Amino acid sequence: MLWGLTGCSGTGSSTVAAVWQEMGAEVCSLDRTGHNYLGKLPVKIALESELGISGLSCMPSDKIRYVLRDIAFTSPEILAGINSVLHPRLSRWVAFSTEKLKNKQGIFVLDGALIFELGLEKCFDYLVTVTDELDRVTNRLVARDGISIDTVAGRWESQISLKEKKFRSHFEIHNSGTELELKKKAELFYKDVIQRMEDPGGTQNKKKTN
Image 1 (spheres, rainbow, N blue to C red):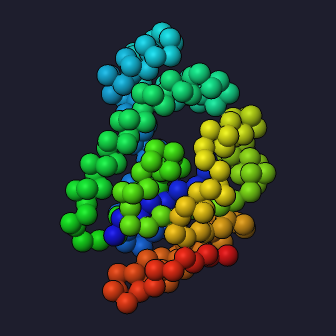
Image 2 (image 1 turned 30 degrees about the horizontal axis):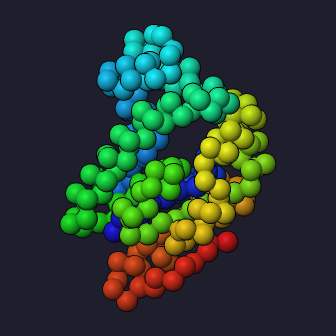
Image 3 (image 1 turned 120 degrees about the vertical axis):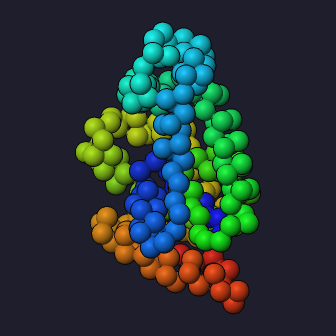
């Protein structure tokens, strides 16, 4: 089965993905794939040309991420330029990868905040959105990652709303407590829903893990 796991930036989908991986699923991160693309010279050259920022083609990927991290979500023009370079590449990679996995046995999960934004929902058998409140996410990301409040707000504004993502998903996991509580919800979801769906008699009804 192919599962898409999404949310808005910082809602906790990566925490859920890590739990599912420990429980036997094969998990890939769309964010990490995007970061890997930043290490490829053709992508660096394309970004340098599109954004008009000299020197990007000579930088390692982690430095490019640092340079673009804040300005990307406070400058619509910069964000649009980044998206024009990375999004088509990510879409092609996901479509190719999921097609190859369809005939393989196992549970495969793509964790990515931009699944809906990239129009990838048809690649998956089921979609799960991890939800949380913006104020909780802001406090968490500012403390954990050292980014600004404006950057968090910009990330959310650049993505489809959680309400819309939840509506378009098969399932929701609501992150309303501690990280440990979210991990327990993720484990329960995996046992009660994903493993049961491996049985032809498993339920396919929408279920919320409160």
